[in-house]
Image 1 (cartoon, rainbow, N blue to C red):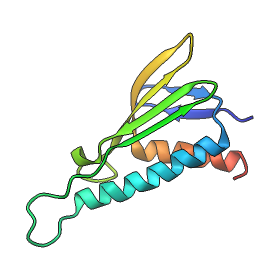
Image 2: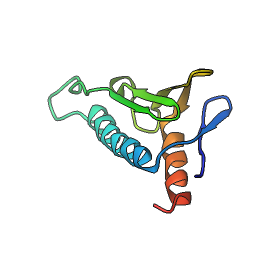
Image 3: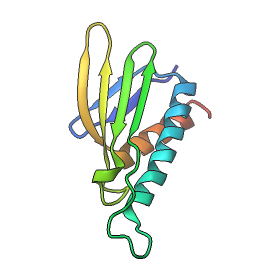
Length: 115
């Protein structure tokens, strides 16, 4: 099994991540991208965009992974950041990562896994 490497704002972390869980995360990110795009655009006559739901992805496997993003606070998908929490019985890591970097890391992992 190929480890999944997440590049964070400062450093990186690698861990075992199920391919199906990676696909679910990818689907959640696609929905988040739609929310970010909706938040960035405003229909004619509206001064404020419609509030969008936050993305909260959780996976429990060899480690617990949580990815959170509030699309309402970023002006575009390219500026968005996600909060990453990773923990097991001996380690707890909380950090921030650029959404675009997470998308690249996930795509690379799925490509290496042959998906």
